[in-house]
Structure formats: C-alpha cells, structure tokens
Length: 311
Image (cartoon, rainbow, N blue to C red; front, side, top):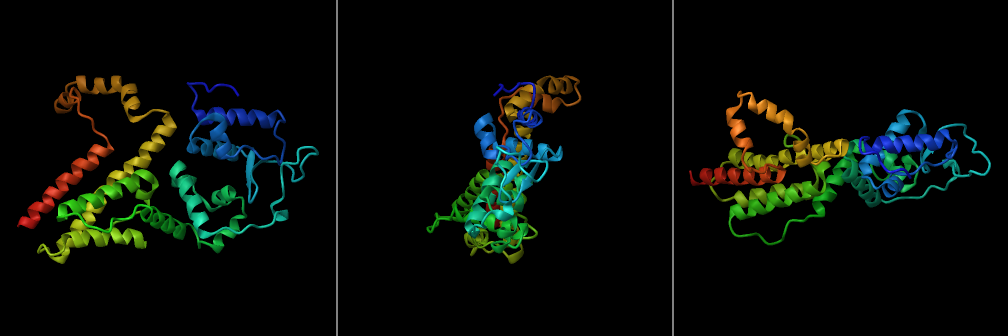
C-alpha cells in the first residue's frame, strides 16, 4: 500500500487506490470491496473517512450495496470463474437479529460517522442480514433514533443517592448529560426542547431536575423553564461536538491546528484596527473550547437560579 500523500485528503487517496484495483481487474464485477472496518485497518483512518470513501465510489457507480453481502463492484450479475466472492443474497439463509443488536450497531455507526452515515441498509450490511429483516425489530429510523437515545442515557444511569443541596444535584445532572453527549456527539441532534424525547431514561433526567428544585417556592412556569434552560445549555453546547468532529475529519486539522493555519488571516483582520477589543483579547492566553463554554455557562446559569430562589 502506498503511503498517503499529505497534500491529499485520506478519503480521496483511498478512493484512488480502490478505483485503480477495479479498473486494473484486481477486483472484478461482483467482488466484495473492502468494508469500512477493513479500510480502517488497512489505511489506519477513522470510520467516517472509510465511509466517505465508499460513498464516493457509490456515487461514481463503481460499487453498489448488496443486502446481506456488502459493497461489491458493479457489473454483470454473474461472477467470473475463479473469483467467487459474490453470493446472491437470495441464496443466503436469513439470520435473525435482536433489537439490541440493531440498536448497538446503529449506535456504533453514529458514534463513528455521525447520523449522515446511518441508514437501515448500512446497519443490515454491518450485521450481514437483509435490510428488510431489520423492520421486524424497529418500525423505521424515527423509532431507531428513539431507541438509540434511550440506550445512550440508560448506559449512564443517574445515581440512586442525591447530593446535598439543589445546586450540587443540578451540577451532577448536567455534567452527567455532558459526558453522554461527549460519548455520543450525534445525540444533540436527536434531542429537542420543544418536542421532548419520549424515552424513559431521558425523562428520568427531567424528573431529577424537577425534584432538585421542588420545595423552593418556584411557580410552575419558572420551574419548568429553569429545567428546560439547563437542559438546553448542555444540549446546545454539545451541538458543537459533532460539527467539530466532522470538520476535523474533513480537514485533518484539530481546532488548535486550524487556528494556527489561519493565524495570518486572523492577524490581518485584527491589525486593521477595526476590532480593538478583539485584538486585545487575542494577545491573551485564554483557552476557549467546548468544555470551558459548558462549565462557564453552567456556573453562570446556576448563579442565576440561586438569585431567583433568594427572591
């Protein structure tokens, strides 16, 4: 395998190599191409990069997905003698899967690639079963996302004992939610404040927050709005996690590396004299990131809750 060219995005290099294998006849029509997991092992890239490479090959119509088989080279239905890699999905015995397997596999895909990489066909390919067999366990993607979210919250259960004081209880709750979003960045796109997630383990978080603030003289309006504002702060900050992961995957640069790469552009904006306050801050050693935004915002919100309770 040729070493990746640093000037070329990894996914394009993978596409180029697989395209070469197909056009050179090393992979014939009907042959399986490397799966996302095989690409990850062979090229040492992330799942999202591997998935993006296969997606581009599909767009070029060089490969196609066969339910229960995987991604194969496009071409005649018959397989050349001696290759024998393709198996007609209709000849393969259907193997049943459980709902837990479907949810777990879907979560693994979403964790690695985000929600755009998630589809029923993709899950079926990973489980090596026909796509339609998944609908025996879930009605569709909407229910699947609900089950995935509930499983994410269930894996990080709230403690049975409560810390002393409303503030300690809410801090524990919000930091637990932050850790869940950290583990599953796609989750912030599933959660909604105006359309609450009807998942038992997620609803338990709302109950915890209401219990923490109960008995402090708040009316129902203020009580519900405070709980929603706190949840929205965690979720709203967490939206940046998936965006950051996708940007890093696309550019190959971390946030710090991106800032260094754009340092000259930023310096040009600031030296023009139009943004004096920002220019002064840029010379400081302040480290602003999603974690510091979460912590700062949480403390200020809780300070506001304390003042409201005093009133």
